[in-house]
Length: 428
Image 1 (tube, rainbow, N blue to C red):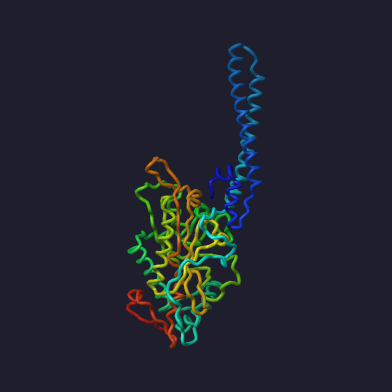
Image 2 (cartoon, rainbow, N blue to C red):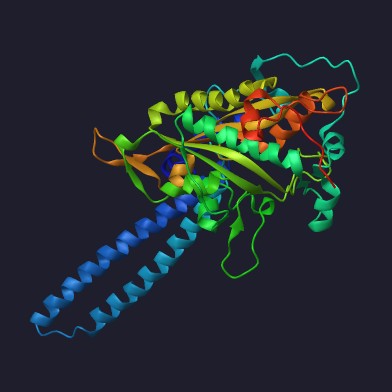
């Protein structure tokens, strides 16, 4: 969340910054709540002073032998008025908190203006899309030809937007995950973590999924109020919820391979074919906790780590910076990396890398101890996909297909595939 003091004292400045998102901050409502809060506080302070004065008078009256009953009744009445004022103040604060929780992060100054993904700005490309001298087969039909990618059985077992992977395709999927983990751990300096795939509401609140995006989550129906994770970002980032880390521990860099579960409530009818948009998929997630002054540089580094995976796989891709109207609720700045999908003749998102600055840390109270002041201060958090495994599998299948219907296995994956240089069909 944003700094409540900043919104209270300078809502016009916050509103102007949020305009880049196309978000209209209710400045009038904020000012009205702030005026009400101040009025109640003044009323409370006056009542407290009056209570203290009358309490002292009770002592003096007792010493003088006077009847203190009227004074005690007056003090009791003030206590009731104070209790009522506290209830009023709580209601005002709760109303302000509800409003504050709905306000997105302020975009960084270098985030481009724009209303939608059409206004995102390309910053670089890597590799040239391959020219095919034969008809391109998409990953759905390629996977089916090997007997290794089965959406019909996934639908039978569960529902639409689930898949069953078998044989060489399943092994290739696993190889991609292991290759990504090894690269990020051994070359990029991340610590591997394994976390629960079910989280509580506090964790989802901390990273910004709740309360705004509950419809996109899968919630368990028992009394514990737990949710399946939409991304490993949630449990990994919450490792440091309500914690104070020492300066010497920073930066903290973690990588996690996990399943992800998303209802895709707002995307019905989009990407219904294939692996682009599934209810269950796997991802290798990168998470960093850094000092505030290092977060901009850390974001560029993190994007480079995700790009390195695609480059090692030889997959053409481009990197774009998201405009104000397209960045996520909690993000201050986001880069999307898009891989070339031959069957669609365009680039499709395969990784989203974001800096949240202190937005998530404030919600989680994730802090570090500033060595200069000795006081706790908010961390900056970042994360990104390094990469989405299903979409990487899709890209490998399509970009490495051959005219005989086979698929070449990229060289960096062959050690994970028992030395195979091409996929083998499933034996049935």
